[in-house]
Image (tube, rainbow, N blue to C red; front, side, top):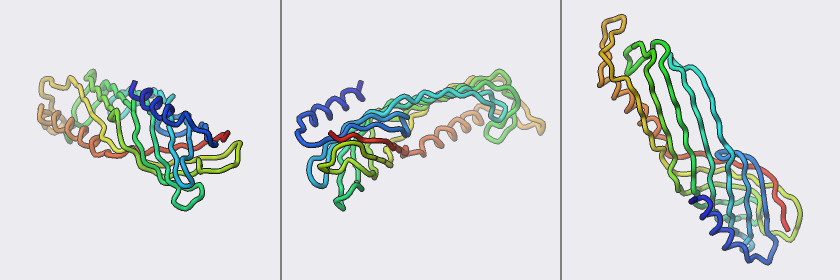
Length: 221
């Protein structure tokens, strides 16, 4: 809902344009397919609204004795201001995005693995990790295209930038079982399990930026 409201607000602001303006489409990440509308507001700046979506990936695999089923869903809407400091197509971009970016990993143990450095049999044990990116984030980037021009027809655009936010992590597991000994007699305790879970959360939380890239065609009318 936030994505739709943000996009509608931008389009309503730009809708009264009487000068040349762009519609555009392309591919990129996150979101896979990008659709947008751009309006030059002067000789060296403009406004844009866009939506990127369609990414829905499911993948299975095995990692360190754990059978993993993973899924990733990503879409976003954005409102951006473009500044063209040199009068050509190169631009600096700032804006805000409304995001729906989530990942889910479901793991079932099938062999031995290491928990906080201790080898343990995890057969039949369950580990579920849910990741969610903030629903609203600031955006900074660079790009090419959408500059003010009297030329009509097809053109080219590209964007490269980052969204600033930290993934929220939710870890569920049923590893709180009778202590297990490895071959060296080391015992897996709840402290080991908690330490491993904390390490996982800390690793994800250290990702404070999410890259964004898009490339495609414009049509000016």
